[in-house]
Image (cartoon, rainbow, N blue to C red; front, side):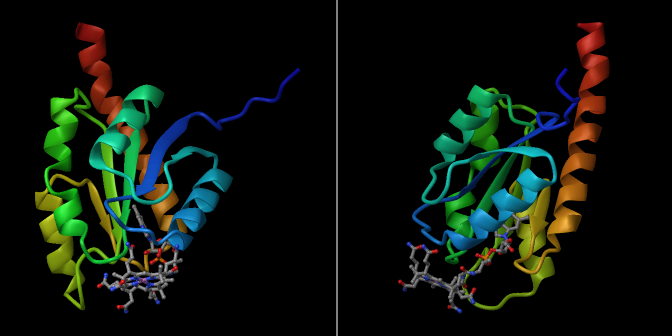
Length: 154
Ligand code: B12
């Protein structure tokens, strides 16, 4: 008999957005999340907004994790939340992390900017990946609870 596994309880799409080819962080994230029992659909580097959304729709992912390392995160991520709504992804979680802007800025300003753009969590390059795993699992469970009453009354 197969043992019970929570491997597919949490499903995320991961990738590096835009023309960004920095690959190392992406591989580390995929590895850490996978080892934490999260099913990762890793699109790798140079991923467009629609490729993230296509993958999330095709796989029924709970979250999209966007990396931006080369400093053009604000431009590349602009309109992503709106595009998710247009494509019918109403309640997917959106996380973003990496070196989101060019040069040194106060991280709180960066966080405020990306939260206003519709991201649920904004992570600095120094984020503790154990914290990331916990936030992700907690946010996914919370999201499912929030969806539940709607499902029942439909
Ligand atoms: C290696 C490297 C390259 C290699 C990449 C090779 C490859 N295929 O991976 C090459 C030489 C190709 C390169 C090119 C460029 N690079 Co470069 N590169 C680096 C370098 C030295 C290391 C990057 C790295 O691997 N870090 C290690 C990994 C583990 O860290 P990480 O990527 O940050 O990822 C971690 C976190 O950010 C976080 N994280 C990342 N994403 C997400 C997402 C979520 C949701 C969460 C929660 C967390 C998270 O978790 C990851 C794992 O711990 C950095 C400097 C540095 N010390 O970081 C510059 C650096 C990233 N590059 C930089 C730049 C500017 C460029 C170029 C634009 C240079 C140029 N003018 O051509 C090009 C861009 C090319 C392109 N199209 O992408 C700048 C970015 C500046 C900025 N953002 O302000 C940096 C910071 C150098 C610098 N100090 O100026 N680069």
